[in-house]
Length: 299
Image (cartoon, rainbow, N blue to C red; front, side, top):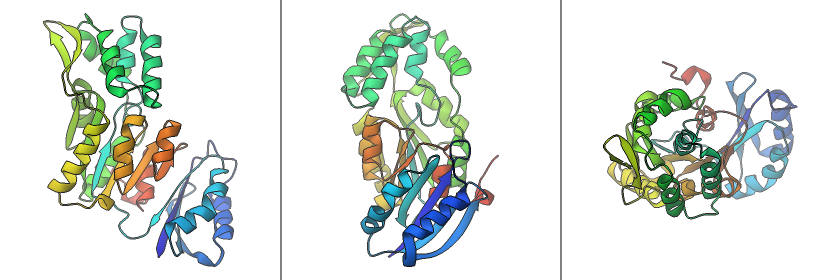
């Protein structure tokens, strides 16, 4: 079968140039190597190869490529690389922070809440129970702090808008599906350009949070359900879907997608994903799909 190996290097984290890394990959591939295509000078290159199966190619490449500092890589069938649907987590994926941790900071509980968040994202705690526990600690927080949090604490992850806008310009549908809160997903979705968003709804009474979240909780099952729902609505095979996230509650949708990517993720999530980005930004997901810099939508 025809296979694409995408190499994406972060020069600030790598001890090797992309040219040297490409040469190393060619040596590993030997007679299976066919040709290269530069996607970004000094940053990203496609290598095309032939192999009987993806598993065969993966087995010969993974250990050696994983030893190269500053390198993210993706191995997949050459056909069908450009996905028609992207589902993305929000906190620590499309934005640089965890919203609930930042809200907790306004009442002096960021350290406590962050510990619970980290444990839940590592898969050590039940997500629904952990969310309920953390939201309860926010009881009485003035609703004015929601906007203050968004305006002063929340920043888009580098490459977020370029990723979504480039895929949309090429016919893809985009969904932001978060275990966070609709107050934030609605704003992030509008800023990035997502077609839809789903998340949890915070309980509010008067001008303060009630310390509750509306049921059912939007977690791992909701993310998977959304993937399956959109696949049916848009008449897509799961092979045409890209899913990206960083936590344990992203694993079901990452495993179900044709290209499931762990983004600066926890070990459990990395182990479940078909590809991982640990060194670069979100534009790596475009390179994985064969997009070159000249294809990027930067408006």
